[in-house]
Image 1: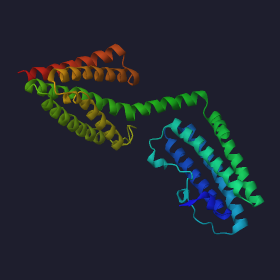
Image 2: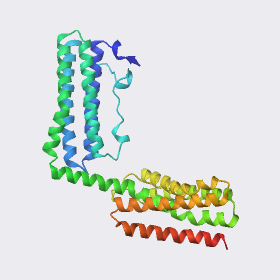
Image 3: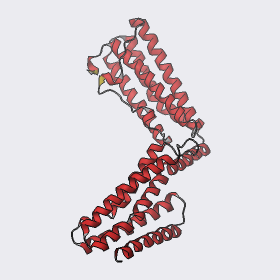
Length: 318
Protein backbone atom coordinates (compact mmCIF):
# COMPACT_ATOMS: atom_id res chain seq x y z
CA UNK A 1 0.00 0.00 0.00
CA UNK A 2 1.12 3.56 -0.71
CA UNK A 3 0.50 6.68 1.28
CA UNK A 4 -1.85 9.23 -0.22
CA UNK A 5 0.87 11.90 0.07
CA UNK A 6 3.09 9.88 -2.29
CA UNK A 7 0.62 9.84 -5.19
CA UNK A 8 1.21 11.92 -8.30
CA UNK A 9 -1.54 14.07 -9.85
CA UNK A 10 -2.05 11.39 -12.50
CA UNK A 11 -2.50 8.75 -9.81
CA UNK A 12 -4.83 10.97 -7.77
CA UNK A 13 -7.08 11.45 -10.79
CA UNK A 14 -7.04 7.71 -11.48
CA UNK A 15 -7.98 7.06 -7.84
CA UNK A 16 -10.79 9.62 -8.05
CA UNK A 17 -12.16 7.90 -11.16
CA UNK A 18 -12.09 4.51 -9.43
CA UNK A 19 -13.74 6.07 -6.37
CA UNK A 20 -16.62 7.51 -8.41
CA UNK A 21 -17.06 4.20 -10.25
CA UNK A 22 -17.25 2.30 -6.98
CA UNK A 23 -19.60 4.79 -5.33
CA UNK A 24 -21.89 4.66 -8.37
CA UNK A 25 -21.97 0.88 -8.24
CA UNK A 26 -22.66 0.93 -4.49
CA UNK A 27 -25.63 3.26 -5.03
CA UNK A 28 -26.81 1.01 -7.88
CA UNK A 29 -26.54 -2.06 -5.64
CA UNK A 30 -28.45 -0.25 -2.89
CA UNK A 31 -31.19 0.68 -5.36
CA UNK A 32 -31.41 -2.92 -6.54
CA UNK A 33 -31.56 -4.21 -2.97
CA UNK A 34 -34.32 -1.77 -2.00
CA UNK A 35 -36.42 -1.94 -5.16
CA UNK A 36 -38.71 -4.78 -4.08
CA UNK A 37 -39.58 -3.51 -0.59
CA UNK A 38 -38.74 0.21 -0.77
CA UNK A 39 -39.30 1.41 -4.36
CA UNK A 40 -39.34 5.12 -3.50
CA UNK A 41 -35.97 4.98 -1.73
CA UNK A 42 -34.62 2.85 -4.60
CA UNK A 43 -35.41 5.64 -7.06
CA UNK A 44 -33.43 8.10 -4.90
CA UNK A 45 -30.33 5.92 -5.01
CA UNK A 46 -30.75 5.36 -8.76
CA UNK A 47 -30.55 9.13 -9.26
CA UNK A 48 -27.54 9.38 -6.96
CA UNK A 49 -25.80 6.65 -8.98
CA UNK A 50 -26.45 8.68 -12.14
CA UNK A 51 -24.84 11.75 -10.54
CA UNK A 52 -21.76 9.71 -9.59
CA UNK A 53 -21.56 8.59 -13.22
CA UNK A 54 -21.53 12.23 -14.32
CA UNK A 55 -18.65 12.97 -11.90
CA UNK A 56 -16.76 10.01 -13.32
CA UNK A 57 -17.30 11.27 -16.87
CA UNK A 58 -15.86 14.70 -16.01
CA UNK A 59 -12.83 13.14 -14.31
CA UNK A 60 -12.13 10.86 -17.27
CA UNK A 61 -12.39 13.76 -19.72
CA UNK A 62 -9.82 15.74 -17.71
CA UNK A 63 -7.54 12.71 -17.38
CA UNK A 64 -7.59 12.15 -21.14
CA UNK A 65 -6.77 15.80 -21.71
CA UNK A 66 -3.84 15.80 -19.28
CA UNK A 67 -2.40 12.30 -19.33
CA UNK A 68 -3.76 10.37 -22.33
CA UNK A 69 -6.03 7.38 -22.81
CA UNK A 70 -4.62 4.84 -20.37
CA UNK A 71 -6.00 5.13 -16.82
CA UNK A 72 -3.93 3.11 -14.32
CA UNK A 73 -5.85 0.79 -11.99
CA UNK A 74 -5.54 2.37 -8.55
CA UNK A 75 -8.14 1.20 -6.07
CA UNK A 76 -9.17 2.32 -2.60
CA UNK A 77 -7.53 -0.67 -0.98
CA UNK A 78 -4.21 0.24 -2.64
CA UNK A 79 -3.90 3.49 -0.69
CA UNK A 80 -3.19 3.61 3.03
CA UNK A 81 -5.96 5.19 5.10
CA UNK A 82 -8.27 5.65 2.13
CA UNK A 83 -12.04 5.32 2.09
CA UNK A 84 -13.35 1.77 2.38
CA UNK A 85 -16.89 0.46 2.42
CA UNK A 86 -18.29 -3.02 2.92
CA UNK A 87 -19.77 -4.51 -0.26
CA UNK A 88 -23.54 -4.17 -0.32
CA UNK A 89 -24.00 -7.91 -0.87
CA UNK A 90 -22.46 -8.45 2.57
CA UNK A 91 -24.99 -6.12 4.18
CA UNK A 92 -28.20 -7.71 2.91
CA UNK A 93 -30.99 -7.69 3.86
CA UNK A 94 -30.74 -3.90 3.58
CA UNK A 95 -32.23 -1.64 6.22
CA UNK A 96 -33.58 1.52 4.64
CA UNK A 97 -32.44 3.78 7.49
CA UNK A 98 -28.97 2.20 7.50
CA UNK A 99 -28.36 2.75 3.77
CA UNK A 100 -29.56 6.36 4.01
CA UNK A 101 -26.95 6.91 6.74
CA UNK A 102 -24.34 5.07 4.64
CA UNK A 103 -24.98 7.42 1.71
CA UNK A 104 -24.42 10.48 3.89
CA UNK A 105 -21.18 8.99 5.25
CA UNK A 106 -19.93 8.18 1.74
CA UNK A 107 -20.56 11.70 0.50
CA UNK A 108 -18.77 13.26 3.49
CA UNK A 109 -15.75 10.96 3.06
CA UNK A 110 -15.50 11.61 -0.68
CA UNK A 111 -15.78 15.36 -0.12
CA UNK A 112 -12.83 15.24 2.28
CA UNK A 113 -10.82 13.23 -0.28
CA UNK A 114 -11.41 15.81 -3.03
CA UNK A 115 -10.54 18.72 -0.77
CA UNK A 116 -7.33 17.02 0.32
CA UNK A 117 -6.46 16.08 -3.26
CA UNK A 118 -7.11 19.65 -4.47
CA UNK A 119 -4.65 21.12 -1.98
CA UNK A 120 -1.92 18.83 -3.33
CA UNK A 121 -2.45 19.66 -6.99
CA UNK A 122 -0.32 22.29 -8.71
CA UNK A 123 -2.21 22.12 -12.01
CA UNK A 124 -4.90 24.78 -12.11
CA UNK A 125 -7.45 22.79 -14.13
CA UNK A 126 -7.04 19.67 -11.99
CA UNK A 127 -7.27 21.71 -8.81
CA UNK A 128 -10.40 23.46 -10.09
CA UNK A 129 -12.15 20.20 -11.01
CA UNK A 130 -11.29 18.55 -7.70
CA UNK A 131 -12.53 21.63 -5.85
CA UNK A 132 -15.73 21.62 -7.90
CA UNK A 133 -16.26 17.93 -7.15
CA UNK A 134 -15.67 18.55 -3.45
CA UNK A 135 -18.36 21.23 -3.55
CA UNK A 136 -20.64 18.85 -5.48
CA UNK A 137 -20.16 16.12 -2.86
CA UNK A 138 -20.86 18.66 -0.10
CA UNK A 139 -24.10 19.50 -1.88
CA UNK A 140 -24.88 15.82 -2.35
CA UNK A 141 -26.09 15.51 1.22
CA UNK A 142 -28.50 18.36 0.54
CA UNK A 143 -29.30 16.85 -2.84
CA UNK A 144 -29.98 13.47 -1.25
CA UNK A 145 -32.31 15.15 1.23
CA UNK A 146 -34.04 16.96 -1.67
CA UNK A 147 -34.44 13.73 -3.62
CA UNK A 148 -35.79 11.97 -0.56
CA UNK A 149 -38.16 14.84 0.18
CA UNK A 150 -39.43 14.72 -3.40
CA UNK A 151 -39.71 10.94 -3.62
CA UNK A 152 -40.45 10.13 -0.01
CA UNK A 153 -43.56 12.01 1.00
CA UNK A 154 -44.68 11.65 4.59
CA UNK A 155 -47.08 8.85 3.65
CA UNK A 156 -44.49 7.01 1.55
CA UNK A 157 -41.82 7.30 4.24
CA UNK A 158 -44.32 6.08 6.83
CA UNK A 159 -45.18 3.10 4.64
CA UNK A 160 -41.49 2.28 4.09
CA UNK A 161 -40.77 2.56 7.81
CA UNK A 162 -43.65 0.20 8.53
CA UNK A 163 -42.35 -2.21 5.88
CA UNK A 164 -38.89 -2.05 7.48
CA UNK A 165 -40.40 -2.83 10.89
CA UNK A 166 -42.41 -5.73 9.46
CA UNK A 167 -39.35 -7.22 7.76
CA UNK A 168 -37.30 -6.81 10.95
CA UNK A 169 -39.94 -8.70 12.90
CA UNK A 170 -40.25 -11.36 10.20
CA UNK A 171 -36.52 -11.95 9.65
CA UNK A 172 -34.99 -11.25 13.07
CA UNK A 173 -37.56 -11.15 15.88
CA UNK A 174 -39.62 -14.19 14.91
CA UNK A 175 -36.75 -16.71 14.57
CA UNK A 176 -35.04 -15.21 17.61
CA UNK A 177 -38.20 -15.37 19.70
CA UNK A 178 -38.92 -18.94 18.61
CA UNK A 179 -35.42 -19.95 19.64
CA UNK A 180 -35.53 -18.08 22.94
CA UNK A 181 -38.87 -19.63 23.87
CA UNK A 182 -37.72 -23.12 22.96
CA UNK A 183 -34.40 -22.78 24.78
CA UNK A 184 -35.90 -21.20 27.89
CA UNK A 185 -38.89 -23.51 28.21
CA UNK A 186 -37.97 -26.88 26.71
CA UNK A 187 -34.73 -27.20 28.70
CA UNK A 188 -36.42 -26.55 32.04
CA UNK A 189 -37.65 -30.13 32.45
CA UNK A 190 -34.33 -31.97 31.86
CA UNK A 191 -32.26 -29.47 33.86
CA UNK A 192 -34.44 -29.43 36.96
CA UNK A 193 -35.18 -33.15 36.68
CA UNK A 194 -31.43 -33.81 36.77
CA UNK A 195 -31.00 -31.33 39.61
CA UNK A 196 -33.65 -32.86 41.87
CA UNK A 197 -32.82 -36.43 40.90
CA UNK A 198 -29.14 -36.12 41.83
CA UNK A 199 -29.16 -33.26 44.33
CA UNK A 200 -25.87 -32.08 42.85
CA UNK A 201 -25.19 -28.89 40.92
CA UNK A 202 -22.56 -30.25 38.55
CA UNK A 203 -24.78 -33.00 37.13
CA UNK A 204 -27.54 -30.46 36.51
CA UNK A 205 -25.03 -28.16 34.79
CA UNK A 206 -23.80 -30.91 32.47
CA UNK A 207 -27.34 -31.91 31.50
CA UNK A 208 -28.32 -28.26 30.99
CA UNK A 209 -25.27 -27.57 28.82
CA UNK A 210 -25.94 -30.60 26.64
CA UNK A 211 -29.66 -29.81 26.37
CA UNK A 212 -29.02 -26.14 25.48
CA UNK A 213 -26.41 -26.80 22.80
CA UNK A 214 -28.34 -29.74 21.37
CA UNK A 215 -31.56 -27.74 21.22
CA UNK A 216 -29.71 -24.83 19.59
CA UNK A 217 -28.32 -27.06 16.84
CA UNK A 218 -31.70 -28.70 16.29
CA UNK A 219 -33.68 -25.45 16.19
CA UNK A 220 -31.09 -23.78 13.99
CA UNK A 221 -31.32 -26.49 11.35
CA UNK A 222 -35.11 -26.65 11.61
CA UNK A 223 -35.46 -22.90 11.04
CA UNK A 224 -32.94 -22.79 8.19
CA UNK A 225 -34.61 -25.70 6.40
CA UNK A 226 -38.20 -24.51 6.97
CA UNK A 227 -38.20 -22.32 3.84
CA UNK A 228 -35.75 -20.40 1.65
CA UNK A 229 -37.52 -17.08 2.15
CA UNK A 230 -38.22 -16.53 -1.56
CA UNK A 231 -42.00 -16.69 -1.18
CA UNK A 232 -42.54 -15.75 2.44
CA UNK A 233 -40.11 -12.81 2.50
CA UNK A 234 -38.51 -14.18 5.67
CA UNK A 235 -35.00 -13.52 4.39
CA UNK A 236 -31.87 -15.64 4.13
CA UNK A 237 -32.39 -19.10 5.68
CA UNK A 238 -28.81 -19.27 6.95
CA UNK A 239 -29.21 -16.02 8.90
CA UNK A 240 -32.57 -17.10 10.35
CA UNK A 241 -31.15 -20.46 11.35
CA UNK A 242 -28.15 -18.84 13.00
CA UNK A 243 -30.31 -16.40 14.95
CA UNK A 244 -32.74 -19.11 16.03
CA UNK A 245 -29.98 -21.52 17.04
CA UNK A 246 -28.03 -18.95 19.04
CA UNK A 247 -31.13 -17.69 20.86
CA UNK A 248 -32.18 -21.26 21.66
CA UNK A 249 -28.79 -21.98 23.19
CA UNK A 250 -28.84 -18.66 25.04
CA UNK A 251 -32.29 -19.41 26.46
CA UNK A 252 -31.09 -22.71 27.92
CA UNK A 253 -27.68 -21.51 29.06
CA UNK A 254 -29.23 -18.71 31.13
CA UNK A 255 -30.66 -21.01 33.81
CA UNK A 256 -27.88 -23.59 33.36
CA UNK A 257 -24.99 -21.36 34.44
CA UNK A 258 -26.24 -20.92 38.05
CA UNK A 259 -25.55 -24.64 38.59
CA UNK A 260 -21.84 -23.84 38.49
CA UNK A 261 -22.47 -22.72 42.07
CA UNK A 262 -21.44 -25.72 44.24
CA UNK A 263 -24.12 -25.16 46.90
CA UNK A 264 -27.13 -27.00 45.46
CA UNK A 265 -29.99 -25.00 46.97
CA UNK A 266 -28.27 -21.69 46.26
CA UNK A 267 -27.71 -22.72 42.64
CA UNK A 268 -31.31 -23.91 42.32
CA UNK A 269 -32.71 -20.69 43.78
CA UNK A 270 -30.63 -18.54 41.44
CA UNK A 271 -31.63 -20.70 38.45
CA UNK A 272 -35.32 -20.27 39.36
CA UNK A 273 -34.84 -16.51 39.51
CA UNK A 274 -33.19 -16.54 36.06
CA UNK A 275 -36.12 -18.55 34.70
CA UNK A 276 -38.57 -15.89 35.90
CA UNK A 277 -36.47 -13.18 34.21
CA UNK A 278 -36.28 -15.17 30.96
CA UNK A 279 -40.04 -15.69 30.86
CA UNK A 280 -40.61 -11.99 31.58
CA UNK A 281 -38.29 -11.04 28.68
CA UNK A 282 -40.15 -13.39 26.34
CA UNK A 283 -43.48 -11.87 27.42
CA UNK A 284 -42.13 -8.36 26.81
CA UNK A 285 -40.86 -9.24 23.33
CA UNK A 286 -44.21 -10.77 22.40
CA UNK A 287 -45.99 -7.64 23.62
CA UNK A 288 -43.50 -5.22 22.02
CA UNK A 289 -43.09 -6.81 18.59
CA UNK A 290 -45.86 -9.36 18.12
CA UNK A 291 -48.77 -7.13 19.21
CA UNK A 292 -49.82 -9.60 21.91
CA UNK A 293 -51.74 -7.98 24.79
CA UNK A 294 -49.39 -7.74 27.81
CA UNK A 295 -51.56 -9.78 30.19
CA UNK A 296 -52.17 -12.46 27.58
CA UNK A 297 -48.46 -12.62 26.67
CA UNK A 298 -47.40 -12.96 30.30
CA UNK A 299 -50.13 -15.47 31.14
CA UNK A 300 -49.38 -17.77 28.19
CA UNK A 301 -45.62 -17.78 28.73
CA UNK A 302 -45.73 -18.09 32.51
CA UNK A 303 -48.30 -20.93 32.45
CA UNK A 304 -46.35 -22.85 29.85
CA UNK A 305 -43.08 -22.35 31.70
CA UNK A 306 -44.63 -23.32 35.02
CA UNK A 307 -46.02 -26.55 33.59
CA UNK A 308 -42.65 -27.58 32.10
CA UNK A 309 -40.87 -26.56 35.30
CA UNK A 310 -43.26 -28.60 37.43
CA UNK A 311 -42.83 -31.58 35.10
CA UNK A 312 -39.07 -31.48 35.62
CA UNK A 313 -39.38 -31.32 39.42
CA UNK A 314 -41.99 -34.15 39.55
CA UNK A 315 -39.87 -36.42 37.36
CA UNK A 316 -36.71 -35.56 39.25
CA UNK A 317 -38.32 -36.41 42.61
CA UNK A 318 -39.99 -39.61 41.40
